[in-house]
Each structure stands twice: as C-alpha cells, then as structure tokens.
Image 1 (tube, rainbow, N blue to C red):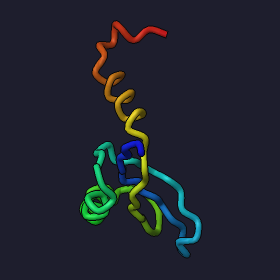
Image 2 (cartoon, rainbow, N blue to C red):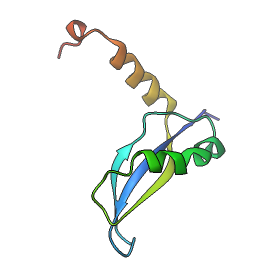
Image 3 (tube, rainbow, N blue to C red):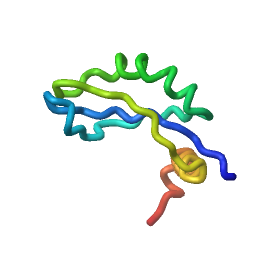
Image 4 (tube, rainbow, N blue to C red):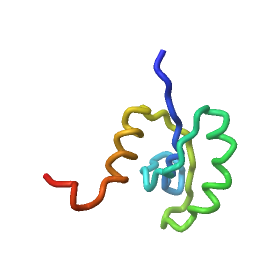
Length: 83
C-alpha cells in the first residue's frame, strides 16, 4: 500500500452551506488523517479572511509523489526552470 499525505483545504460556502468552493489549500502535509483533523480549527482561524458567509476546513488525501515533485520544483533556482 502506498503512503499518503493529508492537506487541509479551506472551502468558502454560501449561506446554506450547500454549495462550497475551494478557496485555499494549506501547504502543510500531515502523515495521518488524525493529525490533519487536529489542526483544522487552528488553520481555519488563521485563514478566515475570505469573503464567504461561512468557511469550512477539511482534510484531503494527496499523493506523496506530487508533494515530492512540488518540493523539488520549489527548491530549483529560477534560472534552471526553463520551459
């Protein structure tokens, strides 16, 4: 079984909270769903500046290979990133 990471996604919701739109993903990666869930309230308080009637924070699974690729490209010097 492949390892997974969790990230916290912040969703902006309408008045009835029936329609929610992703507005941000926190860059911290968690090794377990429990660790992710434990931080959702704190993260939501720190990221409450979106213009929606309500905000929701939820943990989402992400592929560690994508995290590794993202970290690799973020660490590359700008001159070496050519398209």
